[in-house]
Amino acid sequence: MTRATVAVPDPAIPPGAAADVAVLTEGLGKTYPGGTVAVEGLSLAVRRGEVLALLGPNGAGKSTTAGMLTTTVRPTAGRAWVAGIDVASAPARVHRHIGVVPQRNTLDRRLSVRDNLVFHGRYFGMRPAAARTAAGRLLERVSLEDAARRRVDELSGGMAQRLMIARAIMHQPEVLFLDEPTTGLDPQSRLAVHDIVTSLQAAGQTILLITHDMAEADALAGRVAIIDHGRLLALDTPAGLKRWVRGGTVVTVTADGTAPAELAAALAAGVPGARGARPLGDAVMLTVEDGQPVLPAVLAAAETCHARLREVRVDPPTLETVFIELTGKELRDS
Image 1 (cartoon, rainbow, N blue to C red):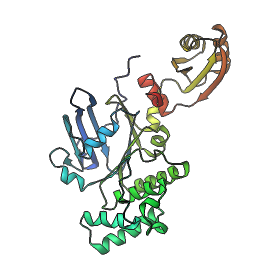
Image 2: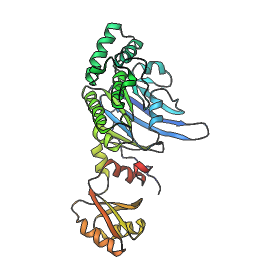
Image 3: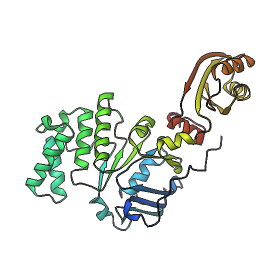
Image 4: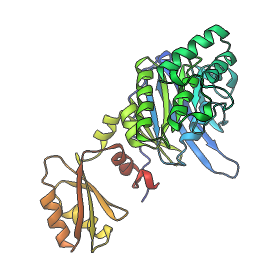
């Protein structure tokens, strides 16, 4: 299937509102030696104080985009500004205005929890007393005050991630980059990180969240940019993206006894108001206009092709639905 190339339009940034934009890209791109295109023609504006999620599968170009904006990857096309500073021409200046929480744990394991923060603050020019005070305040904010004297290698994965976030905001950056911040964490630790992100946003922190987790993007982001194969496919609020899906109800049908493509054709022809029936692995997904009777029509359509139904699931649209509509494939299988 040909992947979508027409993006859902971004609600316009008003002319002259540059002061309200924390991150701006114009035609940003990265092509690696050998011709591999990681990011192509990315034009994006992140407003001050918002959480914007870059959502897409592994290899979509999300981390490369974050690398260009944090100066660890040099663009080969276009331009980008963070806090009004050109990332290519003044990378050292950009560093003072950003905080980064990478996927890999980069804490100093030789130091205590508190000293990781104090040393980071000193690196950014804080006086010793101010750094210690700020460290104590941040440890309380991320619920690590009781672990202040512990070594980093004694922390659980969730505790270490909370410390990484505290370290990233120690110098009060204008923009915080979170790269897959909850990957590998248990559910309780995930919720703790989500609570921290929510509190930071409430305090006015601008956050660029890089994730392949649709529920995370839906829960935390004010707007979501869907990226695949290095291109921006859609950009809107989570609710706006879901409204864009044709039809109002998402029906997923799993059956035995017939090929998914044959079942998709039968459902498209036999379910009133059905739109976009398509095979997805051993199942079929279709969207149906609100108010249409779903289950009786699905049963009748399945009979016409002798399919034996195993499961019929009816859900409202999700960000995964949007991704499937744009690309014709599931996010987790991309």
